[in-house]
Image 1 (cartoon, rainbow, N blue to C red):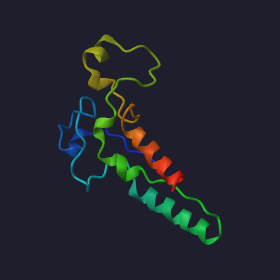
Image 2 (image 1 turned 30 degrees about the vertical axis):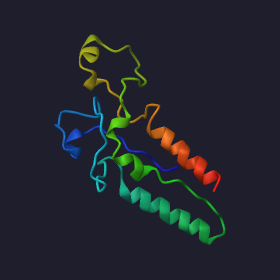
Image 3 (image 1 turned 180 degrees about the vertical axis):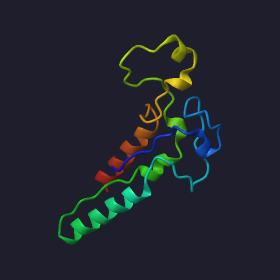
Image 4 (image 1 turned 45 degrees about the horizontal axis):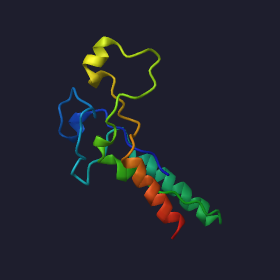
Length: 123
């Protein structure tokens, strides 16, 4: 599978510049949206590398979930991430400070990845 998006700058999808993914309940509805921390050049390098490997007879395939996850700013609805110290009272009062906008919560987006992988395996 390819890389997934993170959603740390709400102004990229029309939110306030001081906000991130915390509290989001709807996906970005613009299918042209591209999360600013996802580098399209890296995807092109990956595609080129796969093409070169296939040309040499090495059959490598990936499921590209990058674009699929670009619009799912609502898929990180938790504070659960690795903290080296317990959350401070300030972080608990303002979950925006401690929200995890790079990992995905279940059920949700990872379930779709699993469905795609299962469909791919059984095709």
